[in-house]
Length: 403
Image (cartoon, rainbow, N blue to C red; front, side, top):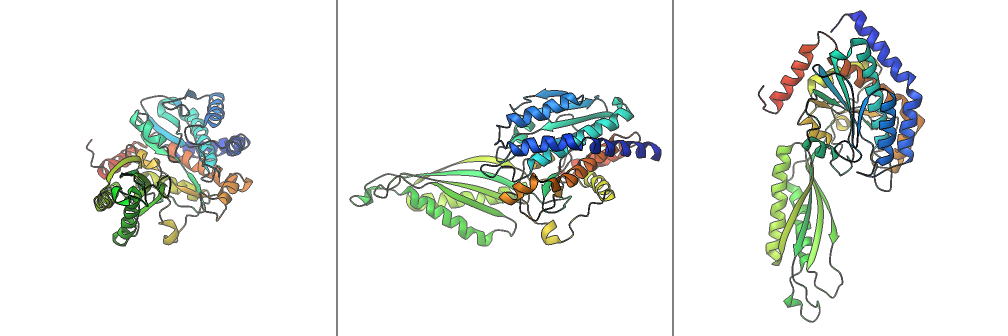
């Protein structure tokens, strides 16, 4: 790292920049929270976020890859490129029950703070990229952006997510969605039932087979589904029935094994009922692979600002769902810490929605913005080339990549 005096000056500048912007950042968060928008429809959030970043001196590309995606940059090529990610979509019916308004606020706060540090270091030190990623809630927006090469040239990616506790290295499961359709033959259920092939029976058998399969599933595997079509009328043997499932596992490798087991249940149900089965794989979010070197830097800065991480393994190590940030972690060294917004309410609940818009969520959100900014700036400091090399080496070894 540069001299202690240089670092202390930058650290003070970063903290002051977030503190002086607290009112603006809260207004952005409140505006997003008060106007919840579903996946791929986040037009209002897109406008207020990009308008603010233009005002703050970033080069902003609106409608980036996706209509409601954006990329905002400050700095120059040739140095370290630190990416901070914003999410801003809401959930149906219950609004910002995952606190994406706070993720956006935190990301914007970290971005403007890193810019403040770069103004001291000089643009030649590198670049900060703020990436607006729509449709985390079931849309896989980041996956679309990865396919479009949005993360090429990025050295590290970071974001922070509100939660009922602090966990720097949370366990996010890989997920695969699947839609299953069974096709049989309709017939009058009372007059000529022997002429029919009951697609609903096939769907029920599939559902039951998957339920029985749970006895042989590992404790941290998850399969949960619903019937989306069970026929049209009781006196017509259903010629079509549909199921919609989520399959989850701690890693992509384990998820692939689980998928094959579920496909066996589908095939068996079809054969048992003389029906045809077809399936379509949908959203596929991977597990989040936390880069240990990068998260260690974040942990240091967060703890220096008074953050106390959860130590109870039953809470700290429990699976907390799935996210397309996992896919980002497979293409660039990444971190996705969770932070306590001063509530015990679980995410995806109406209670959490209320707390995501409450004044009590502001202090922890701004603290996270500072911690992410300091993490990024430590990589941008002159003399810290080895830090990034170690992070990259760990990433390459994790995914079997050669230099």
